[in-house]
Image (cartoon, rainbow over all chains, first blue to last red; front, side, top):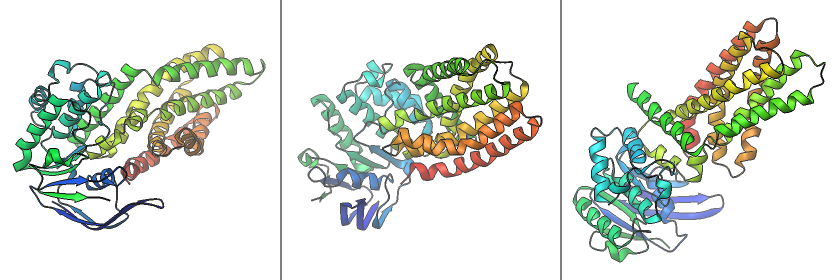
Length: 194
Length: 213
């Protein structure tokens, strides 16, 4: 559950978010929309605990180990292979059946074939698929996704849509997108930033 | 405690693997320390004392370490990866400890080349110097890794790190040179050990505040 009351964020003199109120209950699916520079990414980083609010209250019920975050950057080491990247995160998240989980995700997102190739050699779309594997690796209760369909080809977008639909009943979602129509069947609420 | 150790091992392994693949840091450190010792060899007058040469050895070691520290968080900074590590449920000080251990490995390897070279160009290296270098390495890596993380968050990071690190490295140089040339080397080794203990604890405890807003 996430609850924001009068949430504001400034970087120096620049106001990015001003007195924002919203609530995302457990099991909810909140779609955040808005033009470039409206503060979508900042809001997601605040909710992930990567930024502190300038003022206002932000209550997040999930601890950071139960949170999956897909950022603009894939958060992957380009010199490590797909398998090594996921193995590192799997160890840090202390997954009990790490290898099985990693194998299953790589299969699902069509990356098993390239599991031993360095992430640096991946196309932007393949990196996005691997980043999704990383975000979903520890079966998080709360998923914070920043433009998840970015750079994905038709097949990748379908895979992600299927995955979101499958997870929808059991997870809480906070998703920023420029294309809310794609998530219209899943969303329970929408927040438009100006 | 076991889980903490496992996190540190996983992160250190990652840093060593990255260096093995990218070879960004260690070759530069090796070349720098060798080049510095060669330059000092020709810069020093023929009749200069061993004391002066020992001082230059410490200058070369501190600047070699600085070269490595500038690159310590390069992968995380360039690819925004610190967010991924900070979000993981491990203790954030494990990130610092793993980086410091990887940095220590690079520095020790650079010294494995530097100390024999010093013996070749100048004079032999006694056990006091080796003990001083070992203790100094711990302090350099503890403080340097924390400062490298702080500098990585700023825009003028290449400028910031030397400005932050060199003043804090002064006690290391005093202790190292004192241990290498002084009649009471043991006292200076004690100074280095105290420095290591104090700054390792401070760095370990404060890293979390450096990587979170």
